[in-house]
Image (cartoon, rainbow, N blue to C red; front, side, top):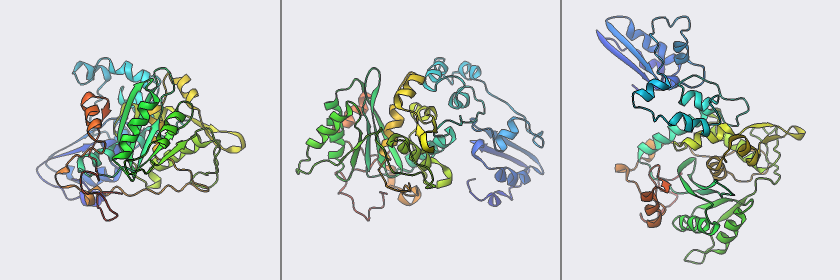
Length: 394
């Protein structure tokens, strides 16, 4: 059964009934209550299974044996049991400890230890919001919807083991992430981005211009399409000031980095109804929850710098920064991001045909494992071009 209306869940009766609550942490209490009627007679059972999340909701109450849930039998599957059953790589906990800045993080507690844990109050974006966005991405992937590329967010590697990361965004969907090599040559990055833009005439690039990223921006602005038209390239300078305010219109920001990350927070906030979709990726889970914020001078909101995050974590949040930049556009005044509703059923592609928008060279990168192809794409160059009437674009 699937419905947003708990009243429609009522009326299930029979001598033998099994009710299964999958991903039970996301199911509202009203749905649990509506299905209680099915337990009134006969041989009836209910099974509620889920990974843990925030310590709230009916599933959490069942797990902590709250009053009124005594008729539930509770079973917590531990990390050691999961490893012993062959369902988790023995090295995974140690890898996640490094990835998610320790064993006390909410991401590690939820996903490795199977414990309920609240997001850190200093985290820019709560883990639950990121997980919800990744569930929406799965809905998009399974729908077979093909999308036109809107923006290419490029976080250029600076030094050491940092990696260049490219985020491909269509409307409010991050379709895919491309991970470059450590110390990747800036000209190679520029050529890579240019290939993507060449196959997507309506798309633009948002490139980190700080440090060696300036070389990527300069080279992209020198390049031209085959018809002589220059590529659309915007430079993202994290340190410059901005007049942008938060969605309430009350708070300003110390710099563009702070404004961009906070804007991403507002887009992911379920109360704002933007329904952002993010690909399932371990780094992308960790980056938003690893980045902290505080109130700076004059009451302005400040996100810790990339260098501060790297010093604390031992790695750079390249993946999160690429995604944040792909959604960034300087707006003077109040931040009111406009994105489309994810009505995938209305935009279903017959057969769910998967088409890459990056061309043959990208296909070779996919086969070599250098690119994570996450879902279906729409390519106007291979399918007769797009238009405002095309039902498959935002």
